[in-house]
Image (tube, rainbow over all chains, first blue to last red; front, top):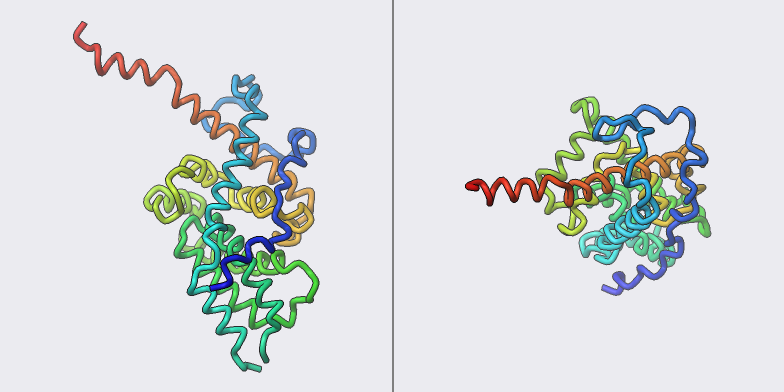
Length: 93
Length: 183
């Protein structure tokens, strides 16, 4: 039961999304196939949403982490903790 | 031989994040938990190939991702459109993927190609560096960067379009048509 509190040890937990903020700069030229937008409009038509870009990007990062952390915060399900304990105590060589 | 308790604790502390990643790949909690169990079986029976002091989460994520990919390839032979199938899973069983409040976001995420989705999750949610994410996916760092960028751009489009739909002219028009029909 002491396994649920170990989340704090996930040292690598951080987000790196902000690091790519200028996200049009290193788009490869081969970037065409799936990029027609879902309304079928040409990708270069000026969109009113473009102004909201930053806000939308922040919302994406936030939602992504909220969705992910919702699962992370569930900790280790008991049957998985049992499995790990069983496997690590077994005397198989 | 018995497993070093320190290593075991590292494995256990990675499980919550590993599960979240698995759910984002599968779009289904039951399948994700199977995948996590399979990953742990594989990992602990090959624990000798893990170098103590290196990145345990990255090692486990790599195993899980490879298992998922080989299963995915198998299924792809059976069902042509695996991405469509993923979206379909979300539609028919939203309760299996988590809380309702994330539904709109999950639906948008499901529309991304699998490569872009996994890159975005690894970097944006799991918190891996681009280098680690590239190692996990077996591709170049630049590839990960462009996948993440395309994923973000596409999600921004999908979410912005959705909110325009929500507050666009259709709703009041429909209300007028429904309520004021007898003028």
